[in-house]
Image 1 (tube, helix red, strand yellow):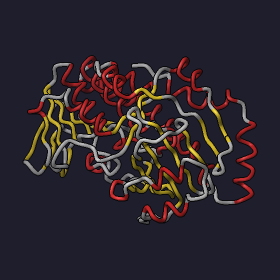
Image 2 (cartoon, rainbow, N blue to C red):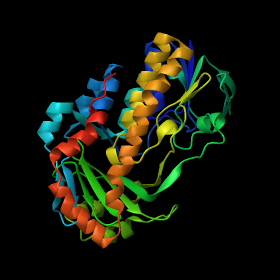
Image 3 (cartoon, rainbow, N blue to C red):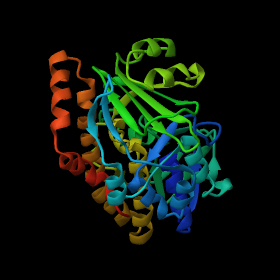
Image 4 (spheres, rainbow, N blue to C red):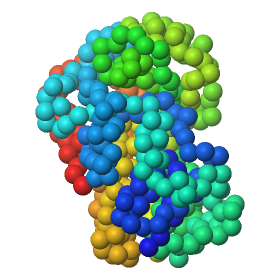
Length: 367
């Protein structure tokens, strides 16, 4: 049996590793000239680690990147809006890991035969019969996996009349700051903007910022330093030590709900199927879940029945998490002073059990 994977990011390489371990021949078509990741940090939550455990890779990632769960959410002035029981989260759900995205890509790439990797290959069309037209010619397989991101060629080929990704109204910056002390994984909310920092095991700090902005806006680091200069520490210090050339900015999209994740002998996964806002930090984790579930279903049940099972299991879950992610971040992007004042008063009064109920479905997934 052969699987073609379109896209060599986290979801695509995980799918390739999963099918390879089950004895399938795999071919990974990646548009970029090499299999790497220019992004910043990534936090893999307990459910994502359990997906990697099915491939024997979870402990390898844990060995270099153990981190604590999110400590909570602060106001711009430093006051707590939500404060989590870190030890309780670890006892209940398991461990978190924070690494550079490139480290995760390297781990996954090493689990795939080198001869299966085809960088510098642009895919032009994917057909339901398992045919893929690309810059190197045409390939065919028993199963094709579209793991080619939010602007997926695979998805457009299969469902050309469905709406594409929609801009959610805010843009995102990411960077890794030099080593410095921070109090843990904390996100801080203002009016229409927020800042998050996550300590990495080597002392560096993964930082991300989100702010309301017209689509296509490009805002330089100098402007960000001015914008957050009066926020609580260590936010100004983190921005002041950032390297302008290493700050990545991307507009934030999510994908309207698809009516199916499969067509013929083709399945889509990760952002190609359910691009979501980063508010729950579940984008990479859901791609990991998708990949190992798809490989297990197709190998155990056969391609046709396996694809049906993959769609039955994964579509409701990922679309639910997409909705929850959108809702979780919405109050951070309110701009009305009365509404944000009400938010800042109300959130500290909410019971911890409410927060726990909102995250439990994401963290408790098992293969």
